[in-house]
Image 1 (cartoon, rainbow, N blue to C red):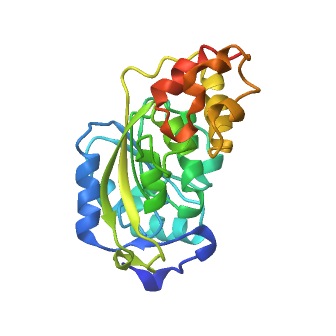
Image 2 (image 1 turned 90 degrees about the horizontal axis):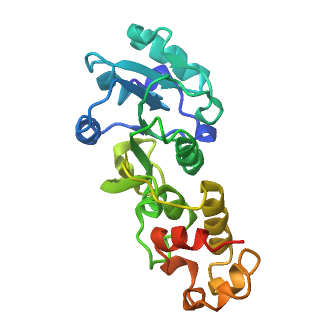
Image 3 (image 1 turned 45 degrees about the vertical axis):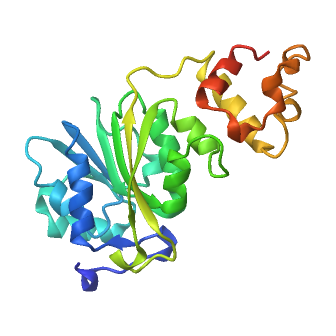
Length: 254
């Protein structure tokens, strides 16, 4: 790490990975799926970048908000000239015209929003490999029936298969975060969930989990006719419904 050459900014959620074994594991996971275009989100001090720029025959770009890190990266890796998008990931336009893979040690303060932005580009993003706060990583990958299964799980899983790859303890970062981290891989499903419409599905999931302690009959009474609400499935709570259950219900909505 070239710690003396830049400062770490808590306001941007900067915790830079320093463990080479973990970095190697992330790169190995990335290389299991072929790609031509690669976007790194939040390269920071270049822990992943220094390996990514060596991958042959790909079109590589990185998106970094912090002025100081942009200058540092351009000096340290001259090959990055004209390849750094100097913005927040949440504000950028789609960076490639063709499909692209996304990788990053994502800033924890916007990591959920990053996943939702990727969802907007799902037709163009076949694979995402990311480091998240462990709680967020587990929520994304959660199966129905538990407390951590929720809006994030149910909105991403119709489109992506999610694998929780491994934990990353705090001491492997500089500075150490106060939480455990986790790396997950999202792989685009070849056959997405069949729903009435994506808008209906999203509305249903958000409404159901907004009052997750209530039965669906009470939480969803504004979205279904009284006759439909007699179905026994409405005796359940949101956290026990699979994405297939939610998909089926979209066809019965008003």
